Image (cartoon, rainbow over all chains, first blue to last red; front, side):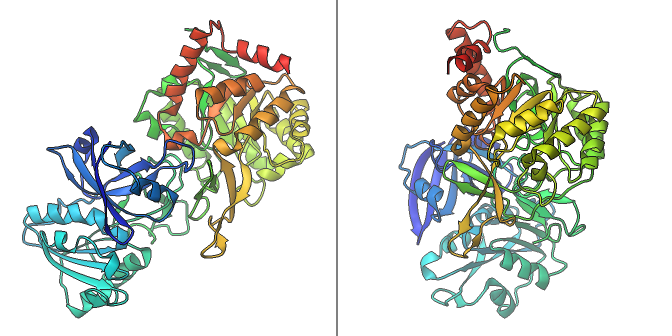
Length: 253
Length: 305
């Protein structure tokens, strides 16, 4: 795909817009791209990065990533009109078919788990669903997309150090504001997902996982997790090809 | 179109290129991307007698020009491999090299007997070199007497040829190669991954849940080339060469070193179309060089150094 823009939107957080035919193949919010940051054998592997939003009319999509290591740093150096080796769209995204118009959806995102939730929020909003979003970040410098999510409904932000929004975790916001919902959608650090699953043991909706991947297509068995039905057994789900989105309580977090 | 034709015991291949065991599952994922009949053969993911979940995650870690993996032989077990995977593969005419693993000799015998009885696998590949399981596996791959005994016992219960996949985690790989040859091996696969470790300097702990893992990718190619070259000087057994292959030149280098066929592993993860691409490139190369068969490369190569 061709880079249309690539800019830092928060501390070490980059938003890249890419153009290419594969945008037409996106079927649901929450799918991801598997990106080769370099044509050279170092770094060797692709990086899974979720799709934040897409525009099928002009074949563009947006990804948001944090520069954490060698691969994402190389990616952040790409300029307009550079090409990027992309495999995708991969994985199964969020299903919103069962969410009805008059229902309320609570969207909870943490850090770089926020991006795939943006197109989900827009899709739910377009469907007529009432959307409330809670976004958690480390500090004020790492906050992004707060205003973008407001296009879909009410937005609450929390930061660990209290430098933006309310001080504390996303779960504190939900408690303090007594947020009610029919459907719960989340993506972020595993402790956040675990806390949500414990606090709302009957929640309907789904969560999206992040995991180290090899192939991204289900062949290498690098990103496998246990199921809650058979937590110590041989039953499994592959995050890349069975997920990355799963219903609540399906996989062991 | 016979320039690439490669005939090895149990494996009549239209070209010498196959995906390596463990890097291709049982083929289903790649069948969505291209026709598996293009492949010379398919080396299936290791099968054990009972289902295995494998190791906890993280199971992979990137290293310079390579990767470490510690999957832990995850597979659905012998019965499901036969009833689901092999029956699905029946629609393809590409020969199958079934990789088998276990923790005891009896495990290997059971899997070998049942898989060869299906008549669907062209040959077996004895996995005596997986570095990622706690018992069995690699012990059979580092002790020449155990390797020979296992080979003999598996040969005795198998109705198809048996290749032994050698571990590079030994002082002298030719000792192992000769031991399994004397025990009746029909061919060799080499090399498996090299045992390695990556430490997360922030946590101070190994990055992989299994602590150590098997190193693969371009980083290990020179080791594979050296070992194949050494073994080729000692034996005329067919060798399926592997270890970091990702380009046409890599394949040529392996054949010159003494490989009869090659397996592509880690490169399938970075480019899922790598095998059919390399097959096309090798065909073009053979044509451009005027080779009637690709094995002419090997004859030129190994005899000259």
